[in-house]
Length: 245
Image 1: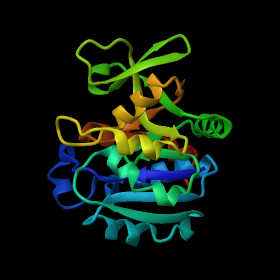
Image 2 (image 1 turned 90 degrees about the vertical axis):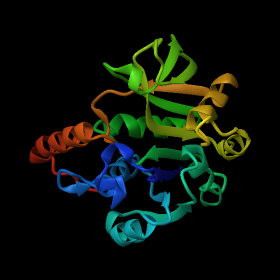
Image 3 (image 1 turned 45 degrees about the horizontal axis):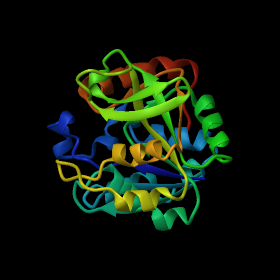
Image 4 (image 1 turned 180 degrees about the vertical axis):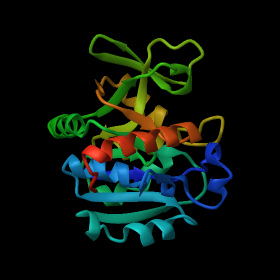
């Protein structure tokens, strides 16, 4: 399986800093934010990783990460033209994937239970379709929320006013190679972007989606509050277990 880290976007909730620097390069305690998804994929056994971002930011990632030799990874890059959506950024990885399954991770997501993620990814090697990692949250109105019934996932709704559950869809998705054809056939949303939720709902409607509820901490570090929360968490954690990428 290959890994894809999506590190584009405008980062509007972190301005004025993101007027100057891509949010995935901002610090979380003593490391750039993007180090954490790299760590998650590496600990899951993935070694080939593609980083996608905008043209302006991509040289900064290349300078920071290089070809991945310092991390024990093989890192390559793809540039996204404009803010065309997460599903569009995913579509740039088709040649990189070369027909393999992919683990797609948003570059501002931090997980602490790497063993569970590793098992989930290993199990998906013998499955087809898609798999989503969900997390119970106290404020479901802020996230894409999964409507589930027993072991079945019925739909995903973005920022629902009346959530049917408190299970947020985290920014880690597993897909079979068909995902690139799926991404090509979805239509832009009202904001003109190709939405990853539409890709996920395609798999759900086809009966090819599974889910797993994540234990441990999950942080979507896209706001000042969550970025600070992530830094405090890593400060406490690293005193006992020094982090390595």
